[in-house]
Image 1 (spheres, rainbow, N blue to C red):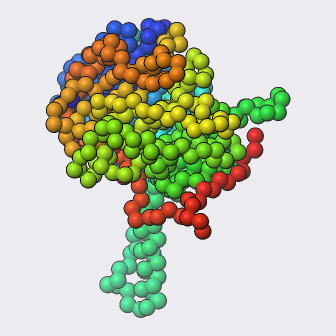
Image 2 (spheres, rainbow, N blue to C red):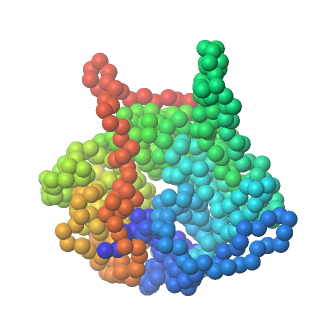
Image 3 (tube, one colour):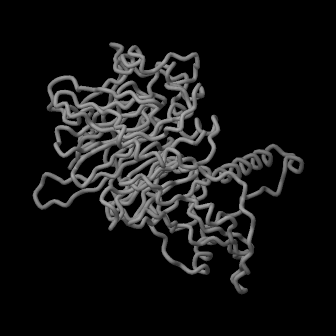
Length: 527
């Protein structure tokens, strides 16, 4: 059984076909698919064209470069792709791989061919006995990524809670300069006390030795910074889960637009910080979640939607730091289960048998008519797409938002929004072809090769609902049958279902004297 597509996106390369290209990551492989005819334009890594790879022997600054030698292809497991996005000018594709924590940048040409750019230095260099390698690998696993509007900088958040900026394309520096810069940033040798508890006998000296040992352990836990061009922008004390870049135009005439970075973490925080280069300035918080915050989505300039471990989505005026609405998800999910959308299973660890909700994805789908634009919602381990009109999320809307769902033949993993030159919008949906509906651990009783679907919006003016477009889905046949890595149950579950693991065990919600959940908003931001 083929591995499902865990990350997908749409790209419109400059000079390419108007239909654009569809990019999909299946395990460690990335496929580029032509959306006009459904053919696979390229894949990475291209193992067929390079059965053996060349490597350069370790070189030193004093001597000539080492000779090349061929090495048989490695049998080691390749790192899986965990993030996939494009630059705003549609010229580059950025991928993050999980196991090696590396950032990879590709150029995409009009035909959809992917050319890796960011790991141009493949050899190791020795400087004063220190071996230095060149790939852009982070100290901690990246968990969120964004590209600045000028297409020059990548903003990256890692699970340690730190947010970095690094150039989209590394500067072309000669090896000597790179070695010198990285050697200066190399960590110092850890301090080791000369004495031990066997050589120290007096009480005062034993206390001094214990203090030295604690200081040694403290230094051993220090996080090593990246050894390439990067800038630490801000940090959370908890695990970072998502980040967004936002721009606000002030109400004052002739005022310049202001840039912000919005970040969320496992400790229920949403932080608003100034944009580059003043990211150290915290402008405000949006506090109200009682469980982890996993996803952030800006639906317009001042409206933010957040979701995670709570049974509701938070709709915020993030500029003012005010919670406008709590959009309940549980009632509709319960109704969907009663309708037979999610079969009841005996798997206690499955999402279908659990009463908790974990939001795994939020997307804004803009239509030609603004009143038809929708917020798309994915819940981990749930075979359905939830959606609500954005026009019903504003504070001025009177009434209950029309939250609805579309049943899918597999658990929803990711969504790519495709807009044509005629402003026709459709969705490409990635589903789990391995696990049973509503389960994140129990395998399917009947395997299926269908990993991708196309959805289109109904023409009914009264009820706008997404439905499976069989004709458009047929164009994805090549991608559905593409030769990818063979899937393993535990590996797929760990890669595709990690949101619920963010939930803290044994904690209770803070309530006020009337038993109501406490909701706080700290207002520090003025525009």
